[in-house]
Length: 176
Length: 225
Image (cartoon, rainbow over all chains, first blue to last red; front, side):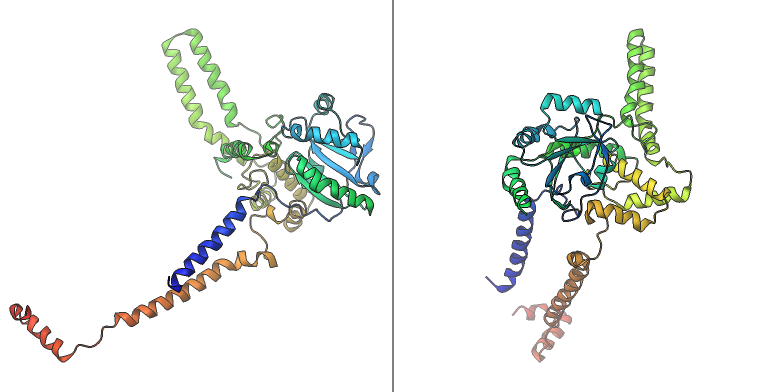
């Protein structure tokens, strides 16, 4: 084979390599620019006790999870058993952000499916969601003791993501 | 901003929910129609209502004439629905035309992260509506265009921009087409040069000149030898 023919073959192989890598990447997983940055502050009313509020400032000094959920969200049901299990194990405080939901529907949903959250707060119009860069439900953030966002799970938490990424990260962050 | 906006959006939602491992990215709160703040006016989905009831009324009467009338009404409503969709898409919420056009320009620069190939101006996804609301509010609060764009980038990253910024990581993206053009130009020059060498035929020998002269004189038979 002449050398000239090798050039288009080389270009083709490189192109194939790029396309192959592209096959395994999910274009919907947009990396968050907030990772490594301070968690955006908020003060929101609690779902079960609307007179009380909660915000990231109240959780400083501990590692915690923020899970964005809603009663209208279908794939929240998918991850919910894992969250309930995690909540029962009391490894880490879990704060629920009840995103663009009716409080009554949200409370009913928790009664039916189990409530893994230490506290759920109400983001009725989705403004806090925007501050956190939420673009779909569910999403889950890991926040460290200093109040920095360290990890974002886009879409439902899977058993694999929990065991291989989230739990090891939480343990590491709790040690430091 | 197009007449096809809302219907495209509906397609997008359907397509993404079937493709996604997590359906809820395409999920919308059930109140989408009820409390959409920036989309007053009719949506195509509502078009069915008057037409459907007209058909039902016609059936109960049972008269052929009424049924035909209902059909005409249905056709008229369906035919007009793109106009209604456009009207729903284009209604500005500001009284101030300058602020309204700024809001539209800005929302055409920003990507909707739910329907990723639409701008937030085009998309009717819940998130796009919320982000349009943010833009309107921030314009009203006197923020500059750059400040609003920075606000979006801080939350959603460079991906939210339809036109990616020039950075170390995007140099190839920006310079790539020019680079390819230059490479192609040099390649073309090389090929043309190589061909020009071949195209220039060597000068004729005396023998060939003689033969050409014979041919031109029409002496074909001798040439066959």
